[in-house]
Length: 144
Image (cartoon, helix red, strand yellow):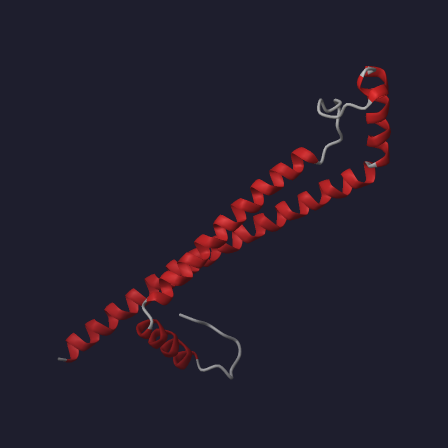
């Protein structure tokens, strides 16, 4: 049952409009479920991208094998020096990237929670509709 504190909303009328719309378009319910499934898949894709971003957002600790600059690729000490200098130069960027990744993960957790709540509410609404239908049928049968 829909509840509202807004006195301008006629709840019975709103519920009947929703029921009529669902009866007219039986695919509306499956479309909503497909939309939630697509949202869940999209969230998983974002999580995978975040994992890849997190792997790449850490400062390098080893010199890449495919970068062969003459004085650097022959001297391990020079490689460590260049890597440390790059780590210091980009420290702020690494921190910003880590915070953005953390914030995006929190957003994804929030979206997951909201999707779960919508599914629970829809299941509850379906159960209430079924109970209301059976109650109406019982009243009709009792009246006959």
